[in-house]
Length: 359
Ligand code: CA
Image (cartoon, rainbow, N blue to C red; front, side, top):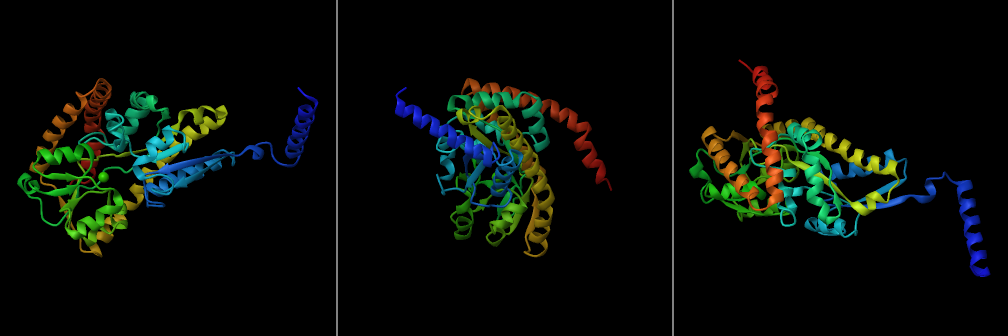
């Protein structure tokens, strides 16, 4: 080392020492992360779920990590967040894994499968049934570590301007319904349309689409969908327990001290549980408002329609699984878990829910 470098190094060490003496040790090295999301900024449930997660990480780490949340289009577009975090433009992304079908077909199984798992069952599969390990395997090629970061519970079936009394009523219907559910609608004779959240209301109002699904009463009312359609159908057979996700850039995560890595992973897990609680607490109040104040006509899909959609769904999902080995691997695990969940929940959740409303 040259003398000048030695002096410079000594000066830096002295400066660092002075900083340490006047501020708490961790405050000197606050880690600043960016979280990009697919949701409109502060959107109820989904966007606020991302905000809550950022706040939780800040609090749990006592301010050692500060996460700034960006709504869709603030830093990158809604559907660009996967690449942005993979490339390190942001450290975290908050979305839903079925948006990344083009990157990983298997990813769809970690968000929502028509006639698939409920929220409770998804968590069972992910945390204690091998699902999480498969999800990590699916995202590893992209340098991403996934986490379940929220759940909507069973969604609603959608908004229509005519009654659905038979499968024939779905024929020719132009409906905004993404993913595997959209493929099922196509086989039932309808035309699925892909639209991001922000374009749903104007498209329904102008008649560019005949029908739409979105999430559930709490979110749908926020979008004003009741102003553009009269009939509100249930249940959301296509999204029975949609899991939201938070993925983290693997290099950024592994560069953190061990305790902060544990904090980030567990904050995501707390957020997962909290979003379901939020929807569970708020959906029915919103539904009452829709029906009692806005005159929405609540309808249940006829059993005949649901049965037909279930048969079509099973075929669509099975065919999807045959398209590549990773998707098949995830499908096999998912279906085996669903089969045993149907058995167990037949004598527990389902039996109890039926008993609770016996007349
Ligand atoms: Ca939906």
